[in-house]
Image (cartoon, rainbow, N blue to C red; front, side, top):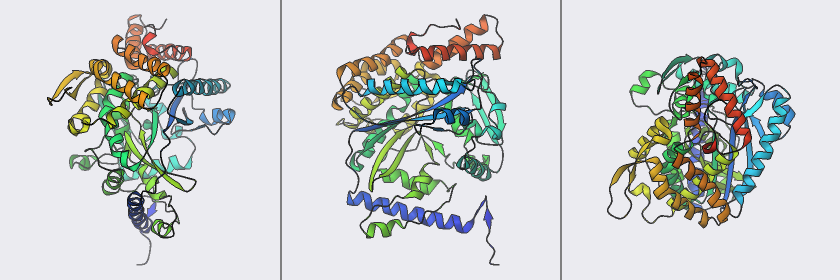
Length: 499
């Protein structure tokens, strides 16, 4: 009696205190929303890109600490695996020539990082999943040397209570197991942030959910994992399985995975934070000393650190974000759908398409989420991940007649969504030259039915037909990809084949 009971590395009193703090944070968020205490959005967008490190042979290099030491910039940070980096771009105000400025900053920053990486026999590769990664690369020993990654791994492993099983059936089938969450590090993505008012949050989040499948269809860039050709965008099934805290019996009972699309349209940001608390046990029950309700009673603004920490361990493809800057709170929608790459131009085109489309859809008088079942949006996401640019999606018919039909992703983009994205960029006051150039990249991908995933798959097939074995073909595909990526021409202009 009187002894602390330890569970999964934290004693139970810590977990109980943390859950109470989460309840207080949720109540604090509700008060902030009711009192309209949030920052007025300034049309700010933000962007983060996760990167791979590979040698001139196309093979992964476990040298992110050495590369970061040479880069010596706070814009670049570690990611989960030793072969990963992340670059964070300072927020930009949407409008004018913002996308050209963003592209120039990315080219400058990535070029500098690549030069520094070459000092340790590595280079920067923007790609959803590096094709040359093997299961032996994604082991605990190659986890980045950062305490929070080790702690997160330990807590997810303890919650699951057994090895992680990967089973992905695509063009080929991959089955294997892992004793850690490190396979998640194979997934490198682009995250797009948009600051919104509480009143507009639900419309923007719902719009982002509705178009997530379209983003994947035109932007898929992850067809290979551990030498197998899987889905055109294999990150979502990999990420879900590599972070799944549910043992099989809980999966069978319908317990929700921590990586998920969601299950309904929402009316408020509060809905999503409340779901997080209701459905997902805390993984990192680390408490801050702040009493959020007392801070509010005293006229201040709480940081809601526990809420933020817990939110970061629920891997939604469109995530709500509570932020705090200089004593002023704000809300963002973080879009985590897209893979990295293939080129800076492609990344910026994907961003322009997203920001324009979400603005237009969020302001429609008959919003798409009132005409499309959430189940259809979730199914669309799965279909787009499997089939990429060839996906067939469920979408509301144009006009007032109503109903939902199945349409090819490319026809949907060309006939309906590109004009909407253009009107959305106009509403952001983006210059026509930026609007037309970057949306033109999306248009040409659709007309050619080509994206990063289709290019990789076809180039690999040609390499195999030339007589290379599987490993050599994957390495040759990766080397050619890196060469063309650094060349800068968007992927729809890339020649097929390894030479």
